[in-house]
Length: 104
Image 1 (spheres, rainbow, N blue to C red):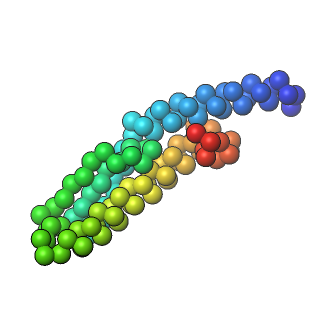
Image 2 (image 1 turned 120 degrees about the vertical axis):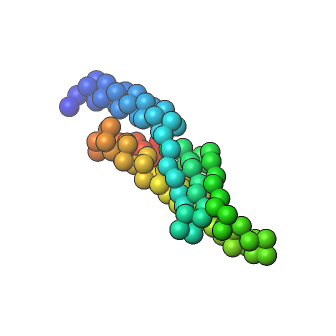
């Protein structure tokens, strides 16, 4: 493969990766904890955009348990966002998506 063709392919991949990143910003994932007592919604970039609490999640005498549930739900949402990013990059860019995934 000559250098000019390689550069064109890299530019195409970079453009496609930017498109995927934009798409990820519009997608959402939901993380949960406590069997659904706490749900956190995040964008495909991992930015938390929503939170739902079921009545059983709030015990005024045990706020530490609620804090733990929130933390677990946030971490679950972020993990799912990371998995979504990897899936979309791989789907859209094939093998090169994994090489570029951390760059965008």
